[in-house]
Image (cartoon, rainbow, N blue to C red; front, side, top):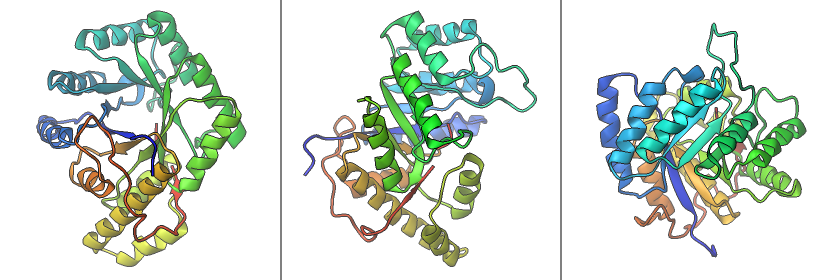
Length: 305
Protein backbone atom coordinates (compact mmCIF):
# COMPACT_ATOMS: atom_id res chain seq x y z
CA UNK A 1 0.00 0.00 0.00
CA UNK A 2 1.20 3.50 -0.79
CA UNK A 3 1.19 5.89 2.14
CA UNK A 4 0.37 8.91 -0.01
CA UNK A 5 -1.22 9.58 -3.36
CA UNK A 6 1.28 10.35 -6.13
CA UNK A 7 0.43 12.86 -8.82
CA UNK A 8 0.80 12.97 -12.58
CA UNK A 9 1.35 15.51 -15.33
CA UNK A 10 1.24 15.51 -19.14
CA UNK A 11 3.48 17.01 -21.83
CA UNK A 12 2.51 18.58 -25.17
CA UNK A 13 4.58 20.03 -27.99
CA UNK A 14 3.45 23.17 -29.88
CA UNK A 15 1.86 22.18 -33.22
CA UNK A 16 3.27 23.68 -36.41
CA UNK A 17 -0.05 24.09 -38.25
CA UNK A 18 -3.47 25.61 -37.49
CA UNK A 19 -4.98 22.15 -37.91
CA UNK A 20 -2.57 20.77 -35.33
CA UNK A 21 -3.42 23.56 -32.92
CA UNK A 22 -7.13 22.81 -33.25
CA UNK A 23 -6.53 19.09 -32.75
CA UNK A 24 -4.45 19.76 -29.64
CA UNK A 25 -7.31 21.76 -28.12
CA UNK A 26 -9.47 18.65 -28.32
CA UNK A 27 -6.71 16.43 -26.92
CA UNK A 28 -6.16 18.88 -24.06
CA UNK A 29 -9.86 18.86 -23.20
CA UNK A 30 -9.96 15.04 -23.24
CA UNK A 31 -6.94 14.76 -20.96
CA UNK A 32 -8.09 17.59 -18.68
CA UNK A 33 -10.89 15.29 -17.51
CA UNK A 34 -8.19 13.23 -15.78
CA UNK A 35 -7.19 16.35 -13.82
CA UNK A 36 -3.39 16.21 -14.18
CA UNK A 37 -1.38 18.45 -11.90
CA UNK A 38 -0.15 20.43 -14.91
CA UNK A 39 0.45 20.35 -18.65
CA UNK A 40 4.00 21.08 -19.78
CA UNK A 41 4.72 22.50 -23.24
CA UNK A 42 8.04 21.99 -25.02
CA UNK A 43 10.28 24.70 -26.46
CA UNK A 44 12.13 24.28 -29.75
CA UNK A 45 15.90 24.45 -30.15
CA UNK A 46 17.16 28.00 -29.76
CA UNK A 47 13.66 29.29 -29.06
CA UNK A 48 12.41 28.27 -32.52
CA UNK A 49 8.88 27.60 -31.23
CA UNK A 50 8.72 30.53 -28.81
CA UNK A 51 5.48 32.06 -30.11
CA UNK A 52 3.78 28.71 -30.65
CA UNK A 53 4.80 27.48 -27.19
CA UNK A 54 3.43 30.65 -25.63
CA UNK A 55 0.16 30.29 -27.56
CA UNK A 56 -0.40 26.75 -26.27
CA UNK A 57 0.50 27.79 -22.72
CA UNK A 58 -1.83 30.78 -22.89
CA UNK A 59 -4.74 28.62 -24.04
CA UNK A 60 -4.08 26.09 -21.27
CA UNK A 61 -4.25 28.90 -18.73
CA UNK A 62 -7.39 30.37 -20.33
CA UNK A 63 -9.02 26.96 -19.91
CA UNK A 64 -8.37 27.23 -16.17
CA UNK A 65 -5.60 24.61 -16.17
CA UNK A 66 -2.04 24.68 -14.85
CA UNK A 67 0.72 25.09 -17.42
CA UNK A 68 4.48 24.59 -17.19
CA UNK A 69 6.28 25.96 -20.25
CA UNK A 70 9.70 24.60 -21.10
CA UNK A 71 12.40 27.25 -21.24
CA UNK A 72 15.79 26.39 -22.74
CA UNK A 73 18.81 28.63 -22.42
CA UNK A 74 21.05 27.70 -25.37
CA UNK A 75 20.99 30.65 -27.75
CA UNK A 76 19.25 32.86 -25.18
CA UNK A 77 20.35 36.12 -23.59
CA UNK A 78 19.56 37.46 -20.15
CA UNK A 79 17.26 40.00 -21.80
CA UNK A 80 15.32 37.30 -23.68
CA UNK A 81 14.90 35.23 -20.52
CA UNK A 82 13.58 38.31 -18.70
CA UNK A 83 11.05 38.77 -21.51
CA UNK A 84 9.93 35.17 -21.11
CA UNK A 85 9.51 35.54 -17.36
CA UNK A 86 7.42 38.68 -17.88
CA UNK A 87 5.21 36.83 -20.38
CA UNK A 88 4.77 33.93 -17.99
CA UNK A 89 3.76 36.28 -15.18
CA UNK A 90 1.26 38.00 -17.43
CA UNK A 91 -0.61 34.77 -18.20
CA UNK A 92 -0.43 33.36 -14.69
CA UNK A 93 2.29 30.73 -15.05
CA UNK A 94 4.04 29.75 -11.83
CA UNK A 95 5.94 26.63 -12.95
CA UNK A 96 8.76 26.40 -15.51
CA UNK A 97 10.70 23.43 -16.89
CA UNK A 98 14.23 24.90 -17.11
CA UNK A 99 16.50 23.10 -19.59
CA UNK A 100 19.76 23.65 -21.42
CA UNK A 101 18.26 22.71 -24.77
CA UNK A 102 19.99 22.05 -28.07
CA UNK A 103 21.91 24.45 -30.28
CA UNK A 104 19.99 24.78 -33.57
CA UNK A 105 21.70 23.65 -36.75
CA UNK A 106 23.75 26.49 -38.17
CA UNK A 107 23.85 28.49 -34.93
CA UNK A 108 27.43 28.90 -33.69
CA UNK A 109 26.85 31.16 -30.69
CA UNK A 110 25.33 29.41 -27.64
CA UNK A 111 24.28 32.76 -26.18
CA UNK A 112 24.84 33.96 -22.64
CA UNK A 113 24.07 30.61 -20.97
CA UNK A 114 25.89 27.32 -21.45
CA UNK A 115 24.22 25.04 -18.91
CA UNK A 116 20.84 24.62 -17.26
CA UNK A 117 22.19 25.40 -13.79
CA UNK A 118 23.09 28.88 -15.08
CA UNK A 119 19.50 29.35 -16.26
CA UNK A 120 18.10 28.19 -12.92
CA UNK A 121 20.45 30.50 -11.04
CA UNK A 122 19.47 33.45 -13.24
CA UNK A 123 15.73 32.83 -12.81
CA UNK A 124 16.17 32.67 -9.04
CA UNK A 125 18.19 35.90 -9.11
CA UNK A 126 15.52 37.65 -11.19
CA UNK A 127 12.38 36.30 -9.54
CA UNK A 128 13.23 34.70 -6.20
CA UNK A 129 10.80 31.90 -5.41
CA UNK A 130 8.08 33.17 -7.75
CA UNK A 131 8.40 30.16 -10.05
CA UNK A 132 8.49 26.45 -9.23
CA UNK A 133 11.41 25.16 -11.29
CA UNK A 134 11.57 21.70 -12.83
CA UNK A 135 14.83 20.49 -14.38
CA UNK A 136 15.79 17.50 -16.49
CA UNK A 137 17.29 14.26 -15.15
CA UNK A 138 18.83 11.31 -16.96
CA UNK A 139 18.70 7.93 -15.19
CA UNK A 140 20.70 6.36 -18.04
CA UNK A 141 23.06 9.34 -18.32
CA UNK A 142 22.78 12.28 -20.69
CA UNK A 143 24.05 11.20 -24.15
CA UNK A 144 26.67 13.98 -24.12
CA UNK A 145 27.96 13.28 -20.59
CA UNK A 146 31.35 11.62 -20.13
CA UNK A 147 30.18 9.34 -17.33
CA UNK A 148 27.44 8.72 -14.78
CA UNK A 149 29.40 10.64 -12.15
CA UNK A 150 29.91 13.74 -14.32
CA UNK A 151 26.23 13.70 -15.26
CA UNK A 152 25.23 13.38 -11.61
CA UNK A 153 27.50 16.31 -10.75
CA UNK A 154 25.73 18.41 -13.40
CA UNK A 155 22.38 17.45 -11.88
CA UNK A 156 23.60 18.41 -8.40
CA UNK A 157 24.59 21.84 -9.72
CA UNK A 158 21.07 22.39 -11.07
CA UNK A 159 19.56 21.53 -7.72
CA UNK A 160 22.02 23.68 -5.81
CA UNK A 161 21.17 26.57 -8.16
CA UNK A 162 17.56 26.41 -7.00
CA UNK A 163 15.60 23.66 -8.78
CA UNK A 164 12.50 22.40 -6.95
CA UNK A 165 11.92 19.13 -8.77
CA UNK A 166 13.17 17.05 -11.70
CA UNK A 167 11.54 15.20 -14.59
CA UNK A 168 13.48 12.36 -16.17
CA UNK A 169 14.13 11.31 -19.72
CA UNK A 170 11.80 8.44 -20.60
CA UNK A 171 13.09 4.96 -19.88
CA UNK A 172 11.91 1.35 -19.74
CA UNK A 173 14.20 0.07 -16.97
CA UNK A 174 12.84 0.82 -13.52
CA UNK A 175 16.16 -0.19 -11.94
CA UNK A 176 17.95 2.62 -13.78
CA UNK A 177 15.52 5.09 -12.18
CA UNK A 178 15.93 3.62 -8.70
CA UNK A 179 19.72 3.61 -9.04
CA UNK A 180 19.68 7.26 -10.09
CA UNK A 181 17.43 8.26 -7.20
CA UNK A 182 19.70 6.40 -4.76
CA UNK A 183 22.69 8.32 -6.12
CA UNK A 184 20.81 11.60 -5.79
CA UNK A 185 19.96 10.82 -2.16
CA UNK A 186 23.55 9.81 -1.40
CA UNK A 187 24.59 13.20 -2.76
CA UNK A 188 22.48 14.75 -0.01
CA UNK A 189 19.58 15.92 -2.19
CA UNK A 190 15.92 15.46 -1.29
CA UNK A 191 14.48 16.87 -4.52
CA UNK A 192 11.57 14.87 -6.05
CA UNK A 193 12.62 12.96 -9.17
CA UNK A 194 9.60 12.35 -11.40
CA UNK A 195 9.81 9.54 -13.97
CA UNK A 196 9.12 10.53 -17.57
CA UNK A 197 6.81 7.99 -19.22
CA UNK A 198 6.67 7.46 -22.98
CA UNK A 199 3.63 5.50 -24.25
CA UNK A 200 4.36 3.26 -27.24
CA UNK A 201 2.20 3.65 -30.34
CA UNK A 202 4.78 2.76 -33.01
CA UNK A 203 7.90 0.72 -32.42
CA UNK A 204 9.55 2.08 -35.58
CA UNK A 205 9.12 5.67 -34.44
CA UNK A 206 10.14 4.84 -30.88
CA UNK A 207 13.33 3.12 -32.05
CA UNK A 208 14.26 6.05 -34.29
CA UNK A 209 13.57 8.65 -31.61
CA UNK A 210 15.36 6.64 -28.92
CA UNK A 211 18.43 6.31 -31.14
CA UNK A 212 18.56 10.08 -31.63
CA UNK A 213 18.41 10.93 -27.93
CA UNK A 214 20.22 8.00 -26.34
CA UNK A 215 17.24 6.21 -24.83
CA UNK A 216 17.69 2.48 -24.33
CA UNK A 217 15.12 -0.04 -25.48
CA UNK A 218 15.93 -3.39 -23.82
CA UNK A 219 16.83 -6.27 -26.10
CA UNK A 220 13.90 -8.39 -24.95
CA UNK A 221 11.49 -5.57 -25.83
CA UNK A 222 13.13 -5.01 -29.22
CA UNK A 223 12.83 -8.69 -30.14
CA UNK A 224 9.19 -8.78 -29.08
CA UNK A 225 8.28 -5.65 -31.04
CA UNK A 226 10.22 -6.81 -34.11
CA UNK A 227 8.28 -10.07 -34.01
CA UNK A 228 5.01 -8.19 -34.45
CA UNK A 229 6.08 -6.78 -37.80
CA UNK A 230 3.29 -4.57 -39.17
CA UNK A 231 0.73 -5.79 -36.62
CA UNK A 232 0.02 -2.37 -35.09
CA UNK A 233 -2.67 -3.70 -32.75
CA UNK A 234 -0.21 -6.13 -31.16
CA UNK A 235 2.45 -3.41 -30.89
CA UNK A 236 -0.03 -1.13 -29.13
CA UNK A 237 -1.31 -3.86 -26.78
CA UNK A 238 2.18 -5.03 -25.82
CA UNK A 239 3.35 -1.44 -25.40
CA UNK A 240 0.47 -0.70 -23.05
CA UNK A 241 1.25 -3.79 -20.97
CA UNK A 242 4.95 -2.90 -20.73
CA UNK A 243 4.39 0.74 -19.82
CA UNK A 244 1.59 -0.04 -17.36
CA UNK A 245 3.82 -2.50 -15.51
CA UNK A 246 6.70 -0.01 -15.54
CA UNK A 247 4.47 2.66 -13.99
CA UNK A 248 3.18 0.27 -11.36
CA UNK A 249 6.69 -0.74 -10.37
CA UNK A 250 7.83 2.89 -10.19
CA UNK A 251 4.90 3.90 -8.00
CA UNK A 252 5.32 0.86 -5.76
CA UNK A 253 9.00 1.80 -5.40
CA UNK A 254 8.24 5.31 -4.23
CA UNK A 255 8.14 7.50 -7.35
CA UNK A 256 6.42 10.74 -6.27
CA UNK A 257 4.59 11.32 -9.55
CA UNK A 258 4.51 10.37 -13.23
CA UNK A 259 5.01 12.65 -16.25
CA UNK A 260 3.46 11.39 -19.49
CA UNK A 261 4.91 12.35 -22.87
CA UNK A 262 1.60 12.38 -24.73
CA UNK A 263 2.98 13.28 -28.19
CA UNK A 264 -0.21 15.34 -28.51
CA UNK A 265 -2.36 12.20 -28.48
CA UNK A 266 -5.02 11.40 -25.88
CA UNK A 267 -5.67 7.70 -26.42
CA UNK A 268 -2.66 5.91 -24.94
CA UNK A 269 -2.23 8.30 -22.01
CA UNK A 270 -5.92 7.98 -21.16
CA UNK A 271 -5.74 4.19 -21.29
CA UNK A 272 -2.64 4.12 -19.10
CA UNK A 273 -4.40 6.35 -16.57
CA UNK A 274 -7.41 4.03 -16.60
CA UNK A 275 -5.24 0.96 -16.04
CA UNK A 276 -3.38 2.66 -13.20
CA UNK A 277 -6.60 3.59 -11.41
CA UNK A 278 -6.14 7.35 -11.55
CA UNK A 279 -8.93 9.29 -9.92
CA UNK A 280 -10.42 12.46 -11.36
CA UNK A 281 -9.30 14.53 -8.39
CA UNK A 282 -6.39 16.91 -8.83
CA UNK A 283 -3.98 14.59 -10.59
CA UNK A 284 -3.97 12.10 -7.73
CA UNK A 285 -3.61 8.36 -8.16
CA UNK A 286 -6.02 6.26 -6.16
CA UNK A 287 -3.56 3.39 -5.85
CA UNK A 288 -1.73 0.82 -7.93
CA UNK A 289 -3.29 -2.39 -9.10
CA UNK A 290 -1.57 -5.76 -9.42
CA UNK A 291 1.69 -5.68 -11.33
CA UNK A 292 0.19 -7.24 -14.45
CA UNK A 293 1.55 -9.49 -17.16
CA UNK A 294 5.22 -8.48 -17.08
CA UNK A 295 5.80 -7.99 -13.35
CA UNK A 296 8.93 -10.12 -13.37
CA UNK A 297 10.52 -8.31 -16.29
CA UNK A 298 13.33 -5.81 -16.18
CA UNK A 299 12.91 -2.54 -18.00
CA UNK A 300 15.37 0.05 -19.35
CA UNK A 301 15.74 3.96 -19.84
CA UNK A 302 16.01 7.19 -21.89
CA UNK A 303 13.89 11.42 -22.60
CA UNK A 304 15.25 14.01 -24.83
CA UNK A 305 15.44 17.35 -23.09
